[in-house]
Length: 430
Image (tube, rainbow, N blue to C red):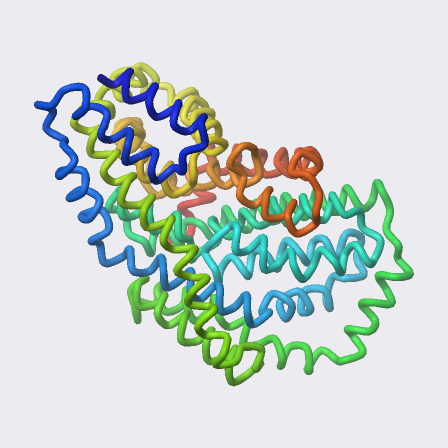
């Protein structure tokens, strides 16, 4: 039965069936083969509904809406100006400013593709006009956009929390230092790349001088509302004033307020298109969440988690080797399956194993999301890759090749996060 389910699942993916539909059909295969199988179509539908009937799931559409409002409000431009003001004239300063902008914008949107689109649309044309290679700019934004799911608030962290019963607040706290570490590694490569290939300092200095001519006070005053967004949202959660779902609502109201009344980059006429775009983004996500919940229950009935635990049980005593195997599996899955579906399916399978090995669930959750974030820039799924390619009119293959050194830097950070748990847990334990 498990073999038939696995074959059906893989075949559906290979022929291009959307992941949500694939999960529903694959969940139904055992009942088609054996009409007496406990999980029939009615059970699957009930499992899909119960998978969505979780209060913390409300934070997902709200953070999506907040990110889209900020995208319409061109908030990424304000963030980029602040960081360019300080480091723009340094070697690799402007590419590094792109990475830092992705870090901050990720703390607003909680989404990798949204971060890539919002930051890339504004920064790629600017960097190209200053002499940077188009493929490098596209690759940088695509890889740095993955920080959107690691820096809190993170939609994948919310999904993992719902699947593992780990506190959303702990997951958000656990993602801060790993996100900064990955950002630092990407900036290190950007510095190396610019040092090796050179920069058009005349154009860059002229651009930064024009920005600095406005004065630090004006730049900071104009950007302060945008910079306050992650502080308000995360500060509210960590101080205990609001729970994550309430913080998501605060994020929507705050982003709408500053975009409508402070920056005036969004008008009342934009609200309906914003809601439509949010719905279009949300519906596939909701289908995947529900279908993945049902699929996970089918796997539980087929005792797949127990089988995996038995298979990997011999590695429990060797934590280093166990983490190598799990990282390898997650990297492959991230290349093939949507991040949300991967988390909802793999969490109940791997969590018992890592718990037996004494690995902290928060550490494992961050580890899982970092692995899957690499999948944002790897074919055939690679959402960030295709977003960056579409914006620059380059082929996904060209962007992917240019992204390889950046992904190596990302993977180096992954190794540090994997084998030094305190990178993830330092803020929680304190």
